[in-house]
Image (cartoon, rainbow, N blue to C red; front, side, top):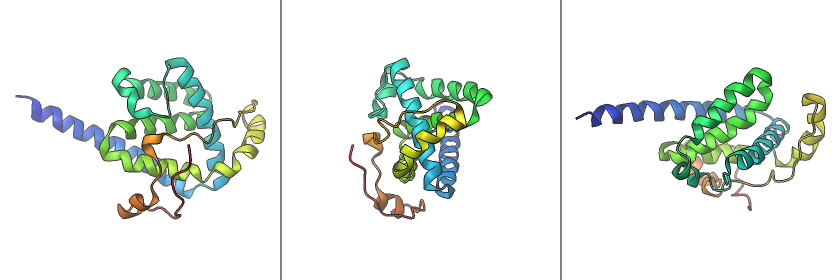
Length: 176
């Protein structure tokens, strides 16, 4: 009887998630490769914490919701807490929130692939960003593991371009 209401709510949640990830990716498109290198380094820092704290394998985020249905909710709560203390560090958690959502919601999966394609632009600048974090945050973040990408969200420039998501380069999926 209330199936239509449930579906309508799901559509609204999906639309909100799609809007969020598209705005985040648009911000990445406008960022320099150096800025993205810093974001990638921060996301890598949070990857370690999330994998250790929750036992998740973020190389395969598509498997996480089956065992941890509230995973995105937990990351969202962490973002809210971290934003109060250090907004720049919260940006790395945003990467994982959008990654978990894109892995779980087919309608935004392509935007998740573009997210990781944009992050790929920062790879050449991760080592320098690691040196810079000591000045910015008072702690040097370790760049080891920054080259790990979620396999399910492998970057596909051709598919992203076909769907009009505005990719400006044609690099292929990074090796994992």
